[in-house]
Image 1 (cartoon, rainbow, N blue to C red):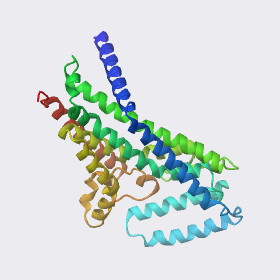
Image 2: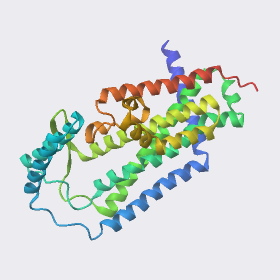
Image 3: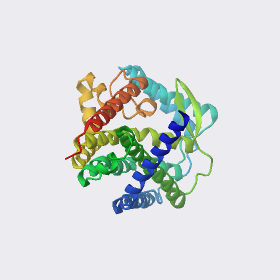
Image 4: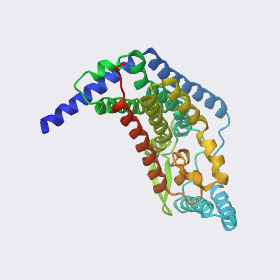
Length: 328
């Protein structure tokens, strides 16, 4: 039994290595990585131009300003109509009180490396676009080129073949995120430097505030903001497996990547059932730094919905691929 597991594990590793080599044999892969690096550089240059000369001196009246802000927030909280709004104001008030109690001024007025890395998180969508392209073609291209027959004649189960392709897609997504995070850190350090004082992120959970390492916070921030990318990548993988059409997979996934959240937000204004839509649940940061799309949604609810969508996508992909006739 143990030897069978070892052989199965080694087979999976070999399949993943094979898929990885296929991806990096394509010139387009290096073009996509190059574009991502270039966009980070361009974004850094724009930020440098905008903040140049705009850095102001430290605010010596920050304590008084925070007290005034808290008074205004308390008045707004009284007029809030929903629990979500009240919780949002409560979070802001508690964080401000923590700053006052522990003598922690608001974010420094000088733009620095961690500000840039945080802002560069907006480029996760671009990394997601490139990952979708890889995901959409990793199965469909095998059928288009006829190479799928060479895979299936091996004494390896179809489930293992398809799983190795999906794992490779996830590894490519992780690679793109890592490249974005590391390169944004390098560019940010070069253009903006480090803050004069060690900065921490004030994390609000269950009515309490804790200080979190800034690098750890940014890694979590990147991870949470990549959920939308992973779900759409999984959808593209499913469409590619079911319909054997990479163009269809890319088209639908990119369309939803660009418009899914906006359409869901519009529907959520009038319909409470919008909370069951995929894009109402992909942004988990709404539970930590904002308000849910639909009042009454919880973190647990969104995680369950994401798991359900994930299982549906995977069930469709694997069930159709196992039954696919490739003799023609």
